[in-house]
Length: 260
Image 1 (tube, one colour):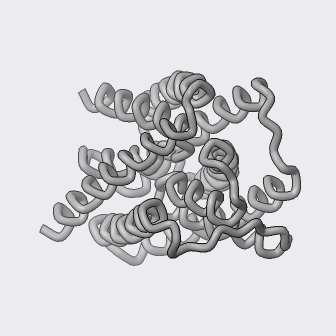
Image 2 (image 1 turned 30 degrees about the vertical axis):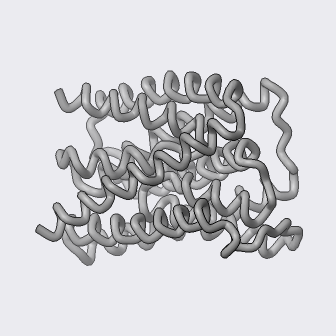
Image 3 (image 1 turned 180 degrees about the horizontal axis):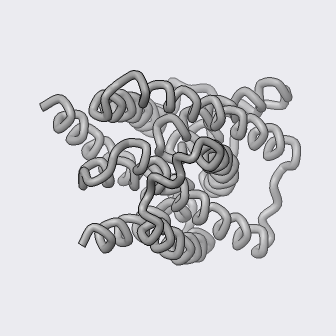
């Protein structure tokens, strides 16, 4: 039953993640927390495996269909994302050793709630936030560093924040921001998985569940990318906005459950 619940969650999350650029971790993490069968470390690894696999499928499909990245932006953001991912995993590991599992989950969910509220404000009150077109290499690297840190520390893949910031800081369309978001998430999760392998944390997971998660993520990534390539900008924005509200609701529920 648990395997089926996880598989269905991964299928929905990676499909939607590839459509909207969310990555899927932002759905997987709170839903797995809600199911409540694994600790924060194991959930983070399952999420990273699913998101990494989905991103690999999605990027290859997008490039096959002719999408071309701006080399300077994608390289600097990706390198920054790897560094941020390493830093985020280091901070996360320190908290896991210093605090209880419930305390770690509470911190993650509180940060996620703040992130989601910021994103909702940027969507519905865009005039508050300036539209930029960053060119400075150090600033572009810093964007990747920040996104990688948030992505890995919160175990969410970083997608919602990625999309919002790519639109805001680089003046991308939502469709462009989606693909850049997925590429950034890919490198952040790669760094997380490498660290988990080196620290032997990867062996805490159930191998059977991990394999099923990765196989389902391949299917979800493929389906989601096909849908993304066919949807209009307005449709992608609508999917993104609905998800932000639903995820905010789930996050509030998770915070209440941890506190109670």
